[in-house]
Length: 278
Length: 285
Image (tube, rainbow over all chains, first blue to last red; front, side, top):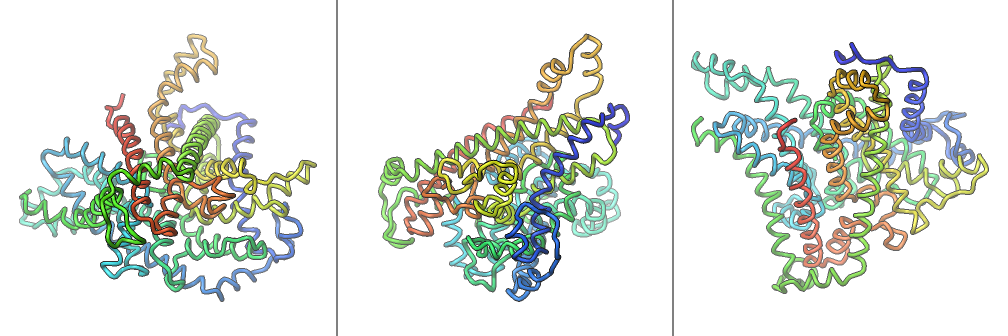
């Protein structure tokens, strides 16, 4: 916000245009929200109308009966599990990488590796991963999904935490070490409190990606009881327009948690943590 | 730090990485040169046979072409639109932060949700888009039914979802340009257009490149959006490389051929990575 000090103010035309464009981008979301509370007859009779005439919660009731709760719970379990595992495995690794002496060259190598993983299309790994999960007995389980999420979550988390840990001055740790504290203690009492905002931001970005993940859930989970929200929705996308209300209602439920965290994404993207979301 | 401690700290991450990324990649590399009778059993070495078969197959070439066409159309449109948005919002006004957040919303949503909404929007008879078109006296458009149009329609959805990403990256880049530079150019009598061409765009080049590469890479993986909207159809007009590999592996169980196609994808991804790494590792100007 400091940059705003000597920034030139916008004219009314520019403000109007900005509002118009924002409205255009928001339109599909508003449509989804409106359709989720419209009776079937209403959205089929006048598809271009946005405001609901006779709001109803019937679609939310219907998806409740179709056990959307189970899919939502599965999504929560996978997201929380995958995020915790990613943070637990990435934090020590990022710490070791950040405090290594020869970190310059390792840095470059590590960046290339993060990029390579990020660039590898998930479908490429799918066939061998199918075998790995089958061997481990984790096909068609939520634990299996938590595990395969790490392919993208882990490098991204390490990369983000690396930046945050480097910003913590060594002197802070050394003082505690002088008092005889051991590494786990230093981590718990000094590093983690100082890094809390960085850990939270990393966790949020990883969580959003896991919440939205589709391909692996689609390939490795067959039982409807283990569907996550994206796979649950995918089974309901078809030609039948009468289901748009229900589809929109699930869409709203699946979108609310990530929209609530949009501020964190905004900050991360503005600071250059550009990768990792899709 | 003692070496033993370093190994201990890195162990969990390395273990997961070896199991979930290195092993699968090596397997793909090996499987690409083998043929099997349905599934994984009894793989035998066949050299480059799979690649020859791929190269001769019309479906693979169509998928490769679709992927490239999609990546080009999507990346270029998103960069241009993102740039226009960044320039539009590069003036102070109350509520700008809120507009930025609204613009970002499509980007954080699940692609499957996005696909479901847009599939309804594209509906020929009662979709939102055609209803709006008809209400102003224009004919409806067969967005997803016309084989020549379906891919562009999916590009449109991608533009809606990912332009906000390009916008934010470029917006951050614009705000990093010292205002004095514009001031000086204005003093020299440079008009708005010349300042854009001679001051803004050159300084924005690294941001444009990073955003563009990132979008190219994501477009290259395209699966969810197509799956949700057309399933690859009509015919194979919107089948992408990811969908093609998926069909070979999980529908036809031709693991060797699927792995060969996957390997081609890895090689292209690797080339993009090299480009990208060179850009990122360049010391900041």
